[in-house]
Amino acid sequence: MNNIIDGIKASLELKKEIKKEIEKDNLTPSLAVIQVGDNKASEIYVRNKQRACCEVGINFISIKLPDTISEDVIIREIQRLNNDISVNGILVQLPLPNGFDEGKIINEINPLKDVDGLTFPNVGNLVLENECLVSCTPYGVMELLRLYNVELSGKDVCIVGRSNLVGKPLIQLLLQKDATVSICHSKSKNIKDYTKRADVLIVAAGHPNLITKDMVKDGAVVIDVGINKENDSLCGDVAFDEVIKKASLITPVPGGVGPMTVASLLKNVVKAYKIQNRV
Ligand code: GUN
Image (cartoon, rainbow, N blue to C red):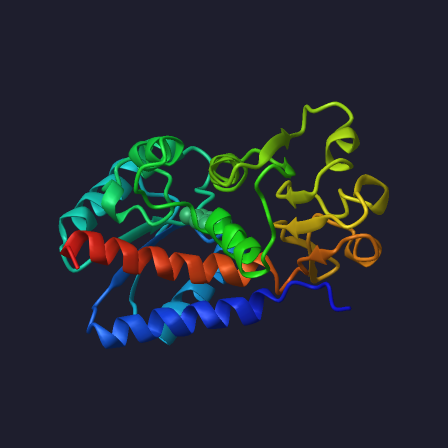
């Protein structure tokens, strides 16, 4: 039995749907990405986003700023994009270089254009189950679980990692599906006690091989959000080769959650376009 979740195939399907929707309704969505400094990983992520936008017909605007600029310059740039009706999505690539106040900068983005779902109104609306833009990686994880018919109601789901971008929004999305959610982090004691009882284990901690087979329940669904570089190749947070023998479903890295994150971003840009244009 093939128990590997194919994120590339799923993302291709999603992109095909998005492209069709854009073409059918003659939509003209546009995404602006602000990058500060020259973080190598960010370069790759942004290039992937640009390529994906191009594939489906979303206009991509790249704004690169040196890390020597002041916070005010970024804020003025965001305000200019907020006021530009031809721009539907604004994304500040994270992490920002040291010394920049990420929270302050992100919250300058008009929430209707906040395709990362990181501004106060979007975070609040997610908790309250109101219409909002949801952070792309959690959205991609939920899409994979839906596509692979993973039942969540009443199931024990363990999230390892509590970032604003992944762990925290996932708590809300899983609660909305009536899962029983536990969340582990760097200060948690005996992580294994939690991971071992999980029907669905979602790992977004940024530590290669953090999850080994002894920490996983037989038949669990394992979603690996980690992207780590080891000896010039990419790996996730899960020791894939051994955990695959216990999991009923597992995402590989690369080729699992990553492609879904990008596809979800495209979906958010189209959603933002529609909200702004009342389509
Ligand atoms: N850096 C890594 N992933 C992301 C993401 O989804 N959004 C932003 N803004 N920065 C990131």
